Image (cartoon, rainbow, N blue to C red; front, side, top):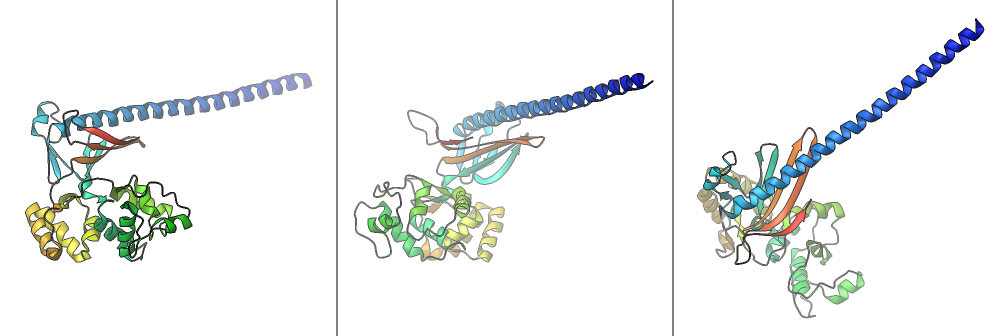
Length: 304
């Protein structure tokens, strides 16, 4: 009986071990299958996002860009389910399982626009430096001489702080990061910089599209009160003309018809986000639709 009991116990122990191994193997196999499914979903979403970007390139290059939207009535003949117009003021628009965000760069802060940049930074609660320091520092960073402006900074200032200032005196900014090397900008933390980057852009043409500026940017650049911003938001919902009339009423002392208007830059920051079952894929690019003899559009930046 003792031998039989021992044999039975050993057999049961082996069966239990094999069952445990089987459970562990099945659990591991299940995880592999789930990861494979998620990977396939990710690949499909990548394909969806890239396909939508190619669709948008054709849509925009064959449509009309004006004010705060793109209009392409003829596109319905090719793709009936696609909208006949898309906004370019940064709002989200949904198409199938994709979210499309188009932002006209004339509605962002051009870092070569001294006044807009200094107003935007100075009025931020993070920094209390005199905006004249930022304005003069921008001037000194971009000019070709070594003469320091009243509130600016030249080589001696940047040498003392061991900044990489090799791109100075080029009459233009070469990157957004250069802005945060300026005198008066040292208080910004990495997190605060990353928060500001989406609102900044580099462009050689200084124009402001009032219709594609977000209320926060509009308010900071032109120094509007919260009450004035709220009135402008409501006015825009009613009509573009009503919005512009109210804007010029609030800003009549600083009216600049050559700079402030409703003309898009034809350079768009385009983001396409595809999502399905808690998996998503986002692609962002900066693309110019300023057509010339060589090309209809040009991708300036691409972030995958």
